[in-house]
Length: 287
Image (cartoon, rainbow, N blue to C red; front, side, top):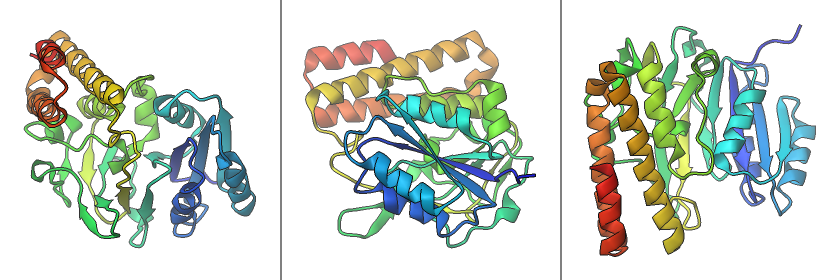
């Protein structure tokens, strides 16, 4: 009888031939194959990402590959959720990697729906920097009786890669990424925190390394993409507001995060200077 893996690492990959090897190796070199499975979802790559993934699969029995037509990051992650067998889900972007030097599987207990992990940025010169703002510091060593308690009053890090997610919780809650949008993490993470039970902040499992790249989705400077990002972000805020208005018992827990999202929207509008008409329309939607 095969042993159920502790963690399913879900790696969406699109034209990731220059980074996929290092990404996958950061997992399989450090974590015993009995402890994890790696699911690479090739999202219709046009380069040799699929071939590289297949060669990695031949070397490691705990790697699985799924190929689909290009549908975007959210769809690839949703595919990974459906394929996963592990007790916990971990999302890893194909141009990032994880540092497992302190991996301790003993800390992965089934009583947690979500585990917050350390996350740092690696910048172009090879140095490391804090991820997020000073308002997003993670209180490692603390346990919370619910995700709502953790969310209340906090500007939580939205990046789903900075958490482990108990698979049964994600599946039973019907949590999925909204497809065809940017900022999908903002919606997924807040909804999950509003629904989840026990959460803990643990820096003894692994550290996620976000590699800063000028050509990444979040750093793209194309005006059309920037406008879509901000429009999608406004829509997410509207959906979250509608949810807490419908279920007012959640309002006091989500209030701070929704305020921080508005502040971040204003910050981006000031940064990109997209014109009065567009800016007024975005502000009208979120206020």
